[in-house]
Length: 81
Image (cartoon, rainbow, N blue to C red; front, side, top):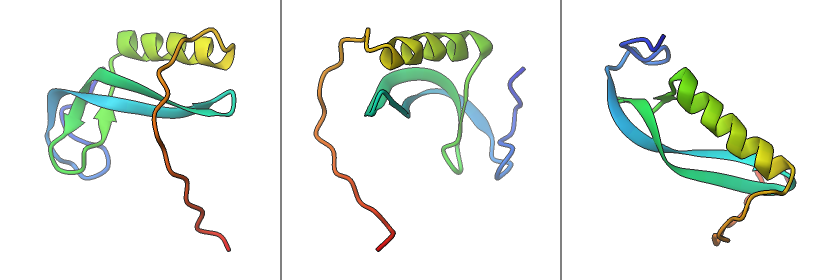
C-alpha cells in the first residue's frame, strides 16, 4: 500500500512519472517514464507492487546482459581524493 504522505519530509504524494537509476553488470541503467507516486516537496518516488515487479524484471535482464539499451552520455565524479 502506498502512503499518502512522504515518509522523509511528509510532503503530499501525487501521481506522476520518474526515472529509476541503478547499477547492473558494470553499467548505469536508466529506466525512463516509470509511473510512481512522487512527493511534491522532495521528489522521492514510491512505486506500486506491480511497477516494482516490472523494474525487477528489467534489472534482472540488465544483470544478465539480455537488455538492448541505448547508450547515454554520462560523467562520473568522485568525492574521495
